[in-house]
Length: 365
Image (tube, rainbow, N blue to C red; front, side, top):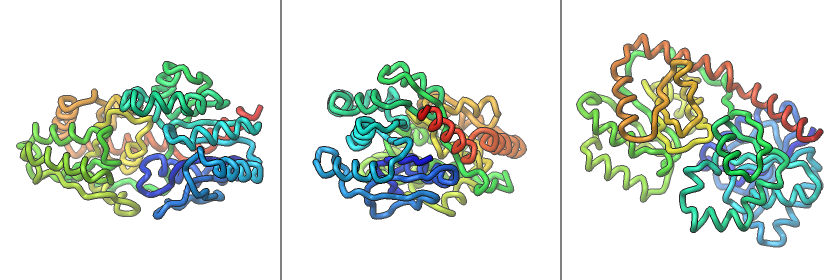
């Protein structure tokens, strides 16, 4: 079986979608002949077990772009074309071009059609983009791939295409070692793209609410983002008097990232919206308890007793942080081991790759 994926970017700064593709290709490429088409980047992630094809421009309105893509498509002749991401025209147009050329199409929005995202810049960006290309790109797909039941529900409510299958994102659990100690390091970690969607302001405000209790702690904010927004968050921390607790450490990758996960007593992702949240899975795989919000699909934090699944906002984040501070090290150890068990049972990259192959077979029937 031949599969061709399109992804707009595999640059290290592309966030969770680039990481998703890196993890998926490593296992999926063992089961199928896998190709990935993307655009040239200055600092691309390494994709294993697949053939990576680079095309020059990310503009489907240039006639040569369609010509180059169709040439590649017909040269590979995939059984399934799989488009990733929304709101960049090329994602939708490659799906439409592939379907018009007679190929089966799977489309993964990666949470980019979630209500919070849809409402943001709706009239200036989302509405015109929907009319021009995005709605049609979703409508023509044979199957829409959601990464959680909550995303499937929201896609069904949207109504553009109700042929939806759920397969979660994955982690390479075999390559992630769990921490060996849960003795408090007085270290709390946020690690993701620094963007307004991520709710970092809630963490800063919650830290201010618990300033006395958190004395001696370091709250690391790891991730890249627009300098203007990072400065805005730094100013908020200074205004609230917690600039000595909050540390912005920039993007962190490779071994350094895993060191941060394991050193942290707690991982916090106070986000407005995530279709999955790969960093939550990575933290749990390392044995680190997690606080995240009901804007993510991680209700299993409660059922597996490995963290806090809260409402969105400062008050809920403060409450969860306070409960974390009251936990004993023995309780944190049990939560950490529970989290590792959750990832091993449900989110291994091998299982997700096998499920994806079954989806492709179903599409081809």
